Length: 469
Image 1 (cartoon, rainbow, N blue to C red):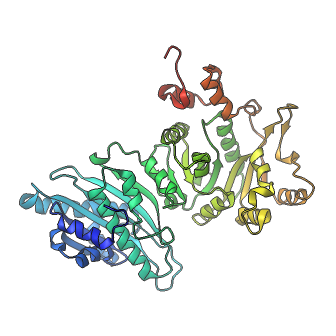
Image 2: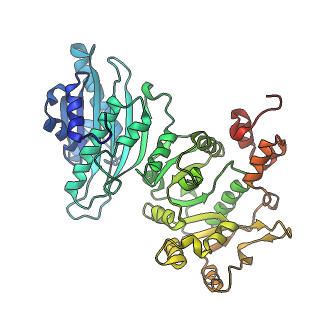
Image 3: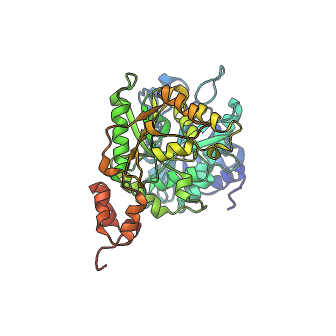
């Protein structure tokens, strides 16, 4: 079936397939998904019940109390309640040849006054075959239209796309992701989290699906925790002070970890930072993962992701090559302090005017955007390989024309020198680790954390081979 298939045709295809029967429950933006199935005709063959609950007391009476009504917890309660009712009420009469499902969404669209965050949770729990255990696909969406009616229309379309993909494209999870914005575009709606679960998806790595969201442009970012579970970025960032280190992490070395640990110690000295609410992130950009090409090496990505998880890192994947775009994303999702961690070479690149040639205001515009809201750069020193000297941010010279700007930013406290670094780590470079792995030079293991070395050996990452193998 063509990926550009009309939404009404998708709804009709579901209605005319006798396998699927279930409930559509929607809170907060009308019966936008159910409406498509009734418009298509033949909905009696698919819809056992539709449900709307706008009043909080009514919603609580049906699904239980909730502190937040637009949340993953509320969505899960809706899916559990409606799916269980279908199985209990209908299995005896039609369970032998019916795949039961429950679709739910809980959404806040643009209010009458405007200015509110427009987002929601949406999911489907379904049997792939009669009497099977259920499977589930859950997504988080952000509505970008200015008009409430357009937001509601977009929600209806993406809901139909999700149901159609679950029923007919589930064998190819990449296709499920790609089809979500059929008849939509990224200017109307963003999908910043997707999670597959259940027996049909037992081989799906949700981190790859998160990566796919960013690669296809459905979202600017994706995130997963040290436990490898995908996270909804806004939820993870909310009310947190954020410290982020950008890198290739191929593989993570002692210097990568030392950079972040040094920065944490400096970051929490700010009286505005609550040490208990600091979220430290390791960020991989799509430009780094693609390395100048257009095709992703999934094995390479998973190797880096596994190694970062082994170090206890929360991983952010972003499509923001510019630091100031990453800063803007973070500042839109937390009111707390933000810090960025970088090595001195990266700071020097930021003072290269060619780096900012794509901006109308060039280098000045880039720095102005980056350092809004008292964002600070925590700068790790480098080793001058020719002289053997340690060079810190306090020693930097960026050229006659730009030096006054550098001195001004330094004087206002935008750059924080990380003084308590481990000097033994300064000579470590990821590319040297990779060369030593390829050359079967086991000294590479001294250049990375023990848990990283162990996992590289165990899983033969980056072409590692044991002696005699």
